[in-house]
Amino acid sequence: MPKVVDPGARRREVAEAVFRVVRRDGLEQASLRNVAAEAGLAIGSVRHYFGGQADIMISAMRYFAERARERLRARAGRLSAPDPAAPDAEHVATMEALFAGLLPMDRERREEAEVWLAFTVGARTRPDLCAVATELYDETRSAAELVLAAAARVGILRPGLDVAAEAARVHALIDGLTLHAVLPPWRVGPSHLAAALRRHVLEITTVPADRLPPPLA
Image (cartoon, rainbow, N blue to C red; front, side, top):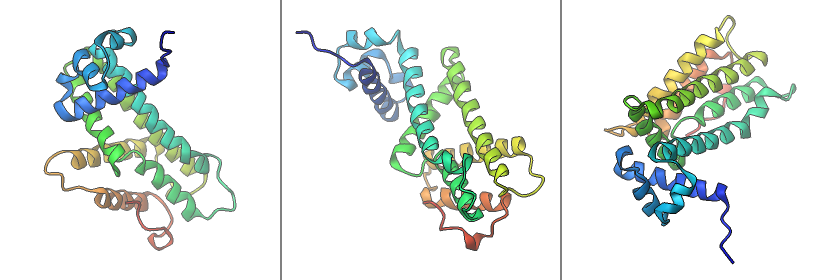
């Protein structure tokens, strides 16, 4: 009997191979042939699911974007549907954890960030990648705004804070810290990321620092 292949599993397998190739060799080396070899597949098997190099890159980035969404969803309920009896410090800690989920504070997120950077820089000169790079950019901004809007509803943001403007600042903070973490000279580690995020969270919320748990490192 012919082997039954799960298309979703095969796409995930190829996405993981794309990430390994891009991290090790750069975006330009993520050809169908190289990705197939990395995945241990015949090139025809990869072509069966993907139209070309741009298609496998786009599919891989969307797959890993979904992983980031899952991290946010795992915590978002505690802020979007909060326990009314929970203290404000708990809501602030939840907001901080949601933003921390977008920073390269562990190996998995660091690897994702390295490939995100390669993909985004490549999209600058590749129209076939530009649309999905813009999609990922907009999604990060939207996520920041949704988190801040939820924080405003539970009353932990400073009075008069403009949620849309603050979402732009948080987005810039996340991108800037990510660049410092994944580019030479690699001096920004998880503790630096956590400390920088904590300073920003204290700036925009009404809860004193001594009521919060230690920064997420």
